[in-house]
Amino acid sequence: MKHRIVVLGAGYAGAYVAGNLARRLSPADTEITVVNAEPDFVERLRLHQLAAGHEVEALKLADVFAGTGIRLRLARVTAVDPEHQVVAVADADGGGELGYDTLLYALGSHVADRGVPGVAEHAFDVTGRPSALRLRERLDSLGRRDEGGSVLVVGDGLTGIETATEIAETRPGLSVTLVARGELGDRLSAGARSHLREACDRLGITVLEHTSVEAVEATRVLCADGTALASDATVWTAGFAVNPIAAASGLEVTQNGQIVVDRTMRSVSHPNVYAAGDSAHAIGDNGRPLPMSCASAGYTGRQAMEAIVGRLTGRKIANIKLVYPGNHISLGRRDGILQMVDDEAQAKPKYVGGRKAARIKAGIVRISLWATSHPTFGMPKRKRRLAAPDASAEKAARVVAY
Image (tube, rainbow, N blue to C red):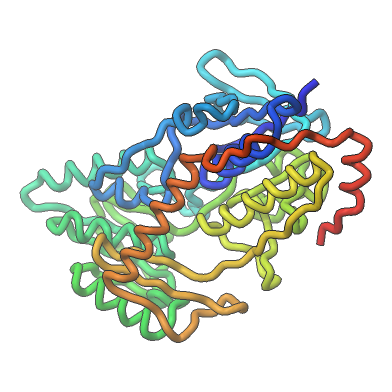
């Protein structure tokens, strides 16, 4: 019987791992199934561009995995039972269950409402393609009005900054306000903060610092100081949350629901479960948890892939560096900020800004897409066969997790 590998989620982490497992493991011994709710690969790094009005092509996962032998199951994951090694899914035909021998959990994250009333009912977000298109339709309708409209972006993290600047540049007829809970760009160096402020001024973005939102309504946002801000479209970018399925499954998770993993991305409570991307609570080489990001998805995904291949084939597991080098922020299509950080995750004094930074960010996006959409590149002529179960288990036991 073949070893069943099931990958939950086909984002940057899941799609990368699945493709590389198919490239390195022999189909004579393994079968790989990817479960994803949508038929498309979502370029999350570009969803703010899609919402603003740019065309962002959606790659079909069926095309991405064509020729790899990977089975694609279009379904929504509803539960994971790690004790019985079963995943429950729901689809148009009613769903069912998938058994696994090795599971990679990479369901990613979604927008976090932080318990603020009205976010779910009235706010827009850019954490998925459908929600980004919904915001785009709203912006289109505002653009057709003679008086334009007001867009309020709540949250001054990277997603909020990129969304506000992209909308302001692409749709100059709209009034854009960025609401920051603290100082705008407080995690950037002094020079990068100054560059960010200049970009907001150039694009006509109103910045409200040290402002906390307590409620979102259909046409306004209520702040903690009693201020009411008019808004025709409120975009919520104030953080991300992971899917609650892992916590409900009995896997060991953190308080926010991320799966606790060892240095190889293996669940500390269930050894045949791995996690990657936003779903994993991975400790970086600097001793700090890796932030939710595309870069972290790449590092954790590669480490999980190396661990799965190594343990199944009885080979030594390579340790992939787990670092967060810095932030690449787009400020529209022609401006950006490249801010590197040190081992303590603090911004280094120097930064790169302007068109050069924008080109670097665009290059990173292209490379990420290419790597995901070409999983068979460099396909070896001889794939690795699985080790005998007893030999594999014996070698796995000798692997030092930390």
